[in-house]
Image (tube, rainbow, N blue to C red; front, side):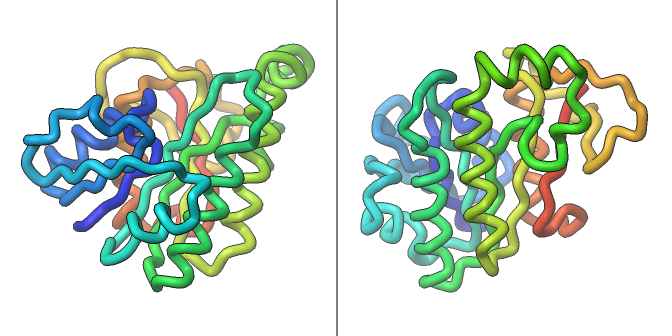
Length: 209
């Protein structure tokens, strides 16, 4: 599969690139600093660009089979880059007829808010994560308004652990006790599975240990 990954040099993005290449995909890694990758890697094309540049985004989407959006920003950043960039990605994909989009969101967005323990809802989300949450919710609004075949992944807090392939995912926790933690490698693992799996098509599953 020909695949463009936006946010390719981020925490999850790096794992997405390496795992996608491992799985035999032809990867175009879009980033403001793509030289962080070894340009000689097989099946890897490096694209330097800004996701807020509509033409650069469009050029990166042309001829692709699917797109993964893993944009990230510092917690207290208020530029809204995830939402603005995702809007450009959605517009380019709809114009070019590229239908599959897998997008990185956050545990707590939308309906997943009710799955958060009280200290997250009362303390953490309104303070440390408030700007990230708003950005991700606006990001998901672009997906919901689109006609794309999208899946938005809502992970718990990232860890540096290894890829295990063993984690909970779903739309409701049904009383299950979740750690709200997940390794970046396992997030990438789950996101790549959504390229061909229609279980969560046009939905926003959470993922956690």
